[in-house]
Image 1 (cartoon, helix red, strand yellow):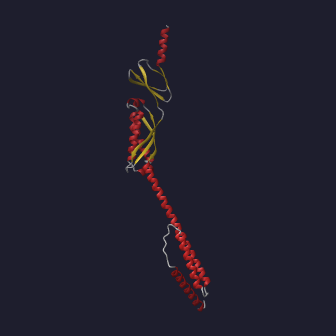
Image 2: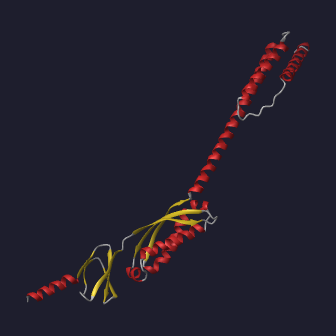
Image 3: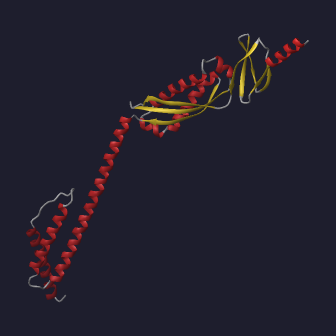
Amino acid sequence: MAPMILVLFGYTIGSTKIINGGNEALVERLGKYNRKLDPGLNFIVPFVEKIAIEKTTREQILDIAPQPAITKDNISVEVDAIIYWRVFDWVKAYYEVENVEDAIGNLVITTLRSAIGSQELDETYSSRSEINKTLLEELDKATDDWGVNVLRVEVQEIKLPDSIMESLEKERAAESEKQAAIFKAEGEKQASISRAEGTVQAIEMIAQALKGQSNSKEVLKYLVAQRFVDANQKLGESKNAKIIFMNPKDVSEGVGELLEEDTHISDERIGNGF
């Protein structure tokens, strides 16, 4: 009796299988698929049946390492992605494909390269959400026969080679220097205009003050010449300045003629009773 009890006890222990929550088990009978076991307490026939696999049916993450790809405009990039997936039918996933996770990974790499190759570099950055959507549709459709649902696809990074990155950095630096030079030249131009306007106003005020004085013409010529020398000195200190030298004598004589003409007009107005 005791041996019989031991046999029955061993048989019971051997036939009892507990499947963890969120998992699914496949039972084979004499080497051939027989049925699924759901989470909880289950029984199999010892020596005749065995559990082939017990796998999760929960969502899983597949991280694709950076992969080389070529854009439509023939620029080499490295792109990586994360795939969220789950097996809804382990019968298909186990019996229809050798290694379902490796198969998904290879399919993702192929589809990812194809998606990148259909767009130019600028488009890959601006339409990443569209790439994710395209990948999701194609992968989910292709993996359905494997009993797999692809839930989400996220392209993480599209990285340019170091040589191209260095070239772009140099180009950006050159553009920044160019803009800075333009702003500086514009500022110097406005400053020169302001100084010139100030000089004109000063000369007009001096001319008004010197009206009626016998040596007004000589004084004005001296002041104009002095202003001319100061202006040339300041312009010469600028690296970006282009200086055109003028004869200060011509400038002062021109101003003197204007002063005489202005004085003559004023005298005529006084003679006419204005």
